[in-house]
Length: 365
Image 1: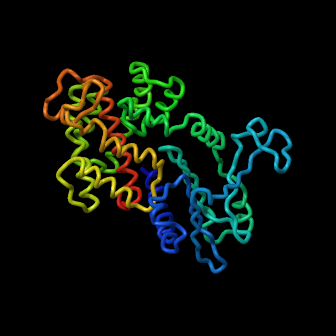
Image 2: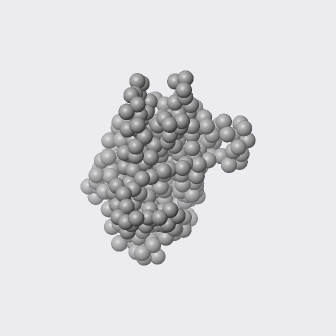
Image 3: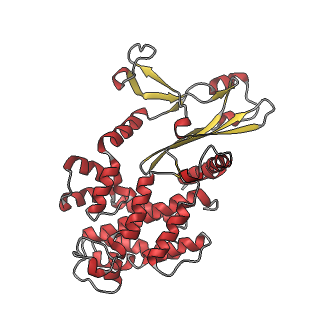
């Protein structure tokens, strides 16, 4: 929880007010909201009178300076490649103003993952000149190789295209397996259900779900519904797919309505209207902290996917998830590992959207 709460605190205390200020002074247009954050850095510059000036850098504004040990001499202007450096010895140079180091918090996003790096030591009182000089040095390690791999993944794998392939193949756009699935599609182009399910299971392992359950318990995420969710997950892991599906599926509408109430809204009657209301709330925020394409794909799936379609439109109940077919007993004999997993993945996607929104609004969790 500390990881997400740290990001939440910086967003609410620094980034969101900064974006609001930019809207007020017209440097950001209202039509550009919510602003997609690929990276942000909050800096606390200490002024001569001892007061603190907050500085917020967003996306391309961040001028990240790195120091890295080289294997050979590199001339100014020469491209730096991995064969010329020791990537494990790459360090962040802290921001410096008026010869004074500044405390900072850096967050970078990649698809649905976050990297945070921070150094607040410059905020200590009574630092000696020797200690100040020490804080100017680059000592915080930066994962430059991981950053390069992420950029290559975006350029080569083309996640947006792969996301649409997943959806058109009746697979839920969910965070837990996004990278695994996109790499699979990059290598195979199309989905073979059996081999693809193996990839899905590698991502959604027993450990993954137990960590999720522990996180939801710690954050009081689903409150009184968690007992049903936990039972559904454990039933799936024990290969009791009938139990997993029939316990979990009725919870989705309630999860959305619960969160609408938490946001101070009376839920509409129908599921689709509830999802649309949730979407409008999420998109009313000043920022979005992961790929907007993925956010839109999750909501598009919740609104227009097979989950809420009339059962008459479902041609194959063994490959498409459908609430009405389960809750009203229309379908039988469809229960399988793949269908059970798809419902769990829908839970993963929905919980991620709610988590993201809570990070922007809820200071109490």
